[in-house]
Image (cartoon, rainbow, N blue to C red; front, side, top):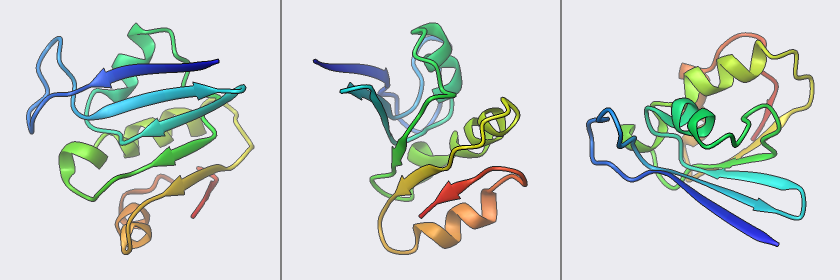
Length: 110
C-alpha cells in the first residue's frame, strides 16, 4: 500500500500550523522523505510518522525552504542511536551543500 503524508506546503516562512515543503511516502515498509523544509521534524512528530526509520531523503532542489530542516532532522536521527545510513538524493551540487550543514555522527550515503 502507498501512503503519502503532506508534511508542509508553506512558502519561505514557516507558520505555526503550516510548515515548509516536505512530503513523506511510505511504500512497502520503506520511508522516503521528499524535501525537508523548516518544521519537518515537528510535522513528522505531529503526524506520528517517525523519523528514525527514514530510508531515503530526496531533495528536489537546494532552495532554503526545501533543505533548511535537514540539519536538525539529521541531528535528531543521529542522536537516536541509529547506525544505518540514510540515502540522500538530490540535484548536482547537493553533496557540497549538505556537507556544509551536516552534523558530526550522522551516517549518510550520497
